[in-house]
Length: 496
Image (tube, rainbow, N blue to C red):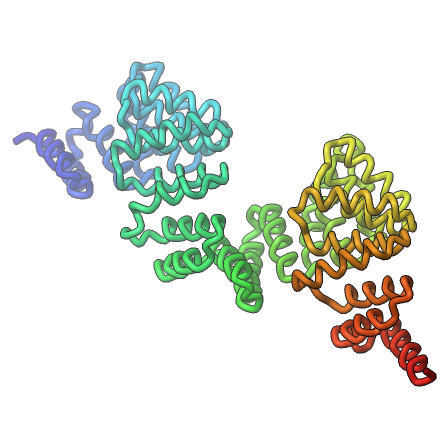
């Protein structure tokens, strides 16, 4: 058997190191033809020894400057050395000299993919698929680029094709599940991944946990997330998701511990100084969750140092200042937003902060702008009602509380505010009837009984007022008004 046949035999068995050593033993033949240098380069590419591969491939190219296959192999090596510019040069040369085959187009696609030139990458991957319709790797890479371009339907078609070819293909199922997650179709994502549960793959278990949390099954979600952790996943994504699951189960202490663990991982990532903007965004969200708002603002301000024109950033910072009760700073940061970017949320936030600064007329003007832009929900009606209440415009306040009630399925708190407005409008019988109805439905608190008592007093129904005040005191024993009213009534009783 000659040395070429022996080499082919070793390659067929995927014994690449042995094939390389075999060629070394026959290096003398390199002067006869191109076989030694070209195949030394190829087999070193298979062994991922790309720098060494390039040395042999350049020698082979000097022997035949029009060999498209050699150009392709050089392009392949440069691709894996992250030298995209050289990779594309040699791969195009490969096409020019006749190596118009699937793997060359696939490598061109990969080079563009790495650059983030997704449209060009998709075109190259599709050219590869014209030559090799069943190539799973190319379909997956093309789907990734389509997802980056938000071409969701096209990506899902390719991913389903891969799954049909290879039902247990984990990466394609994860990609398709992630696509469904982006579209908030969590049940579909669960169906895609459920057949892989027994593989105990950490990412599969993690995504099942994520989807189960989203469909409000925290107990099952926690079980999968803990299994993902046991399977080796321990990163910011897992710790953050665990935190949200514990929050959903009202286990705040455990939630905060997970969020803090995620933050510690982000701090380590910052020391590597990679993708710092994304890291600071995620850290700000976590600091918000554990109510360390100043830290969250610090993270966002670090992003602002690099991106002064980011209006969404100013809104986020304003939102955090609002949570801290620093409404003046919230207003300052909201006014940093460009006029063209002042949408519904901007006007709503501004109104909320002006209201807490007791600038109620200004707040109402902002709410009117939000309404013009399409805001029409319970929060809007309640905020308008509250501002009118502060201005003692009780008729207007009542009208908006009634609108809110129509949107909120007979909410007890809103009904209590309607009753309060009845009292302010001297509609005491209606106020008493509504407060009494709420009590009969077991909606009770000190404020409610105190207001019921006040309305009874206005109607001169002192015995009922006294009974209501005793109930109010049981809830709020330190409330000054309740204590004063009871003292007056008890004095009157003694005098009688």
